[in-house]
Length: 315
Image 1 (cartoon, one colour):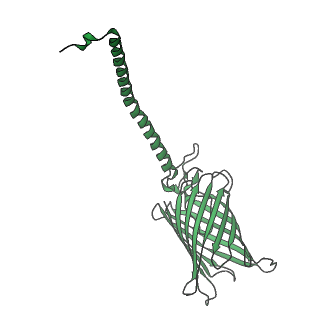
Image 2: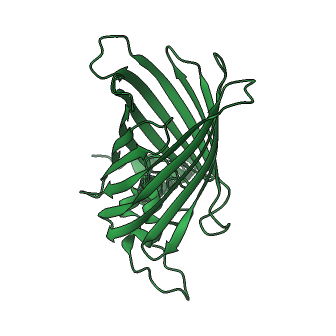
Image 3: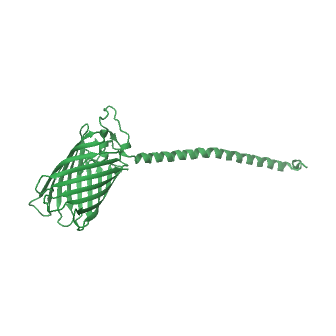
């Protein structure tokens, strides 16, 4: 065999050497690329994992949220009184405590479903008991906001007549983090539209706090206005007090409601409704709460019994 290198000119030899250098550099760059890319991919993967963890933390259920310990303050005696979430609110506020009295907002990222049954029994025995059911979704949002959506149905028990159906939507806004303002004031606005009855707009001021370790209270002032029909106006005061009888399992207390209802243009008699009764919240498992509040009418214009049963489940 002939050695071809012996017949190459000096120029060809130089070109060969340059080509060899280019190929060697390309190979080195390829090897470098194969080393750098895994690191870059790992960094991207770590960033995605951190985003997923942050998203999971944002959607964390209230019962899994770690307690916030404040330096210089003793640890709470009750788990219900532990502070949690973005607003440093007590754990007892993350699920409904009273049937007719709201307090604050649920934590950011929490979603809750509640099924309501309300039984209204008149004092006139010839009148049937009216059953109202509500299916509610609650969403805890950033910036101290909460949005609730309801589907409503209603009918007289034992009656074959047509019932009613409709929807409600409410928004709440707490003025600040928990404990920053006395009573933790929260503004509430609700719109209700049901077939067969006038639409309603209701505005409330919600207040609530702790009286002592394990003792919790709530007070609401509200005005509800029909926007058609008789255009009646209902002003209402509701209040509740409850105790952590079995910490994070059973709350026992009392609720009351006082209301005045008047028709548009009426300056005379206002219907007065005063109700009072026990309040129970049972938490059989950490995701679930069951509320029961049978309120008994104390005036001639009150219902004989206004009973609430509420089953809630936190996702």
